[in-house]
Amino acid sequence: MPAILKKKKTILQTVEEEKNELAIKLLSLKDKAIVHIFKLIFDDLTITSKKTAQTQYNKEIDAALKRVRSGRSVSNDQVMNEMDKW
Image (tube, rainbow, N blue to C red; front, side, top):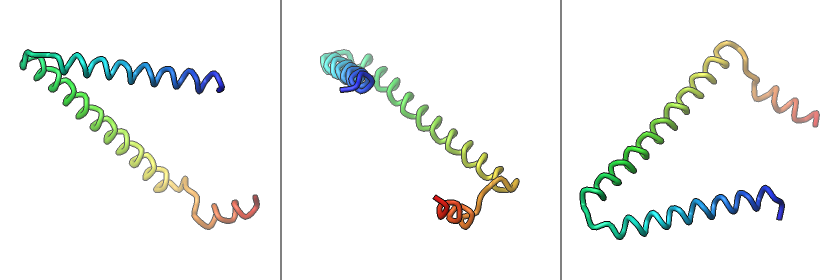
């Protein structure tokens, strides 16, 4: 197995192991207030990542629209003609 794939697999296993350990610790908590705090943190992280993804998507769409409107685009026919040359 190439070293890069081996390294990625090790990293993924480590992340999975850490998530499992965290889940076990969360399951063992008895204090509802602490569990509630963790839930708020996870909810906030989820919402933040969704907002970031949506914001990035909107930026990319806006940039693409600017390129098309300014004439910096290629028609489908031009693409097909270029592909025929391959």
